[in-house]
Image: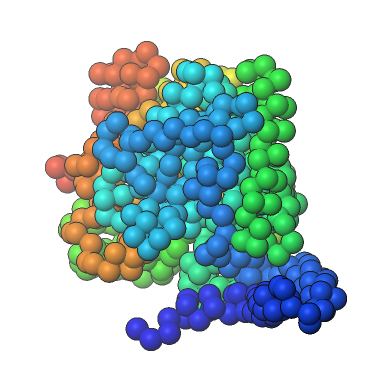
Length: 327
Length: 310
Ligand SMILES: [Zn+2]
């Protein structure tokens, strides 16, 4: 059980953060010394800050896809719960799928933000160890997807637009999940989302893990945070199958073209939402503000569309993804 | 979610005998093929190539293939030892198919329908842009003509080589099926061994009727992934058709030998034709496992149907 390859690769995946963190620590130290002293460190602090800013920008501009996957999974990256807390003026959580249970891996509720009301649906990963376990690390069961759809139908009836936050390694692979129709719950959601007569906005805020992500991801507008990823399979899973080795996850991440820029280039998402310098985990509030502004802009845009037009555009968008050659 | 490899080899060229994957019995090839690749000893249903599926399902001579030549683009420049673009060319040469889906219009027991059949021989029946596109085109054709749709799933899931493009085929196919729902056009899904990943989690699970062949592996996650995740042994029969039926996930299990009659019957209900007449066994293109031993005089045009171009 010592040193699983996934773990060591994971640590490597964030190695680029170390010099940045060290520099930040030095700045913090100097700041402490500077308070109420006559050491006149202000100049040095400013110089270091300038250096950190430059270095951060350089490092983040050059991240490999695998490194971005690790940023997307960063422990301090804002989660759906952070967006709820930092972005919304009001939130009323609604529980349960009315059939089997209340999957904590997906949160749903009535949300209010800047005078706009909507239904929020998001993968929930949890903050503490206990929380994370309760949320299955953001891996939802069928009841989670069915809860999402039950609330989305309610939102449709109340004429509330829908905003979904995607952040999951994938839908949960387990016995109960299969028994209760994991595949059919996801498929049903995807199909029904084409029929929802209210605007839908989806934002990939961290991990866009295959069908588990798409199960709440059929949006009129789909945005991706700059350092999030969206993929048909996890880099580890792909590496295990095609390279026969989990160690090859960095190669698989490269091959899968899973970064926000790739998805935009492939026409699979509508927009990349830039993150604050050095990633959303360095400036949670800054990241949340950007997402908020994007959502508000899109909601305004979409609410101007007649329903028939909205649904037609939604279909056309996904219909056009991946055009084969004629022969 | 993505396509993994099921039961390797089994291309079985030549050779008089075939070993059953399930019970290990040695099967006489000719007999085995006459039973449409069903083990005469244990009833195990082997994966059926798409053309053979069509031959035993539709009324002889009724199949008109559509969009036969559509082929994938390598949008990612994917390369895992062999570049994807090259892999596509090789697989086409090997299988004679341009991708993992064969679509067209046909009649089943006299009922006209739109048919799509996945081909496992083409990269594990994995769903990429061609599979997604053909299903969407078939649904759009059915929407115009109001033909009921029958889809045969046989796939390890999404095609990793097309990355998130393949993932989005789940949305493409479900969106197209949703339009048929809105228009009241009937849809039937037949899940065959194996049906997993992104195919199960999209079009295969959202048709009006969900039919499965006996013993087919049907699920979202692959059994190995689940076993690794939960670190437990999986229950016997887990993710097999019978398990899904018991858990309320599918409507019916239909053995291969009865599938054509059953489909005719269900299509008759869907379209207003007479189900009793449609269900009556007629001269079937090939015999299969049934209570009565296969009649030797059964004329058996086990030839691949000549594909017609659209
Ligand atoms: Zn057998």
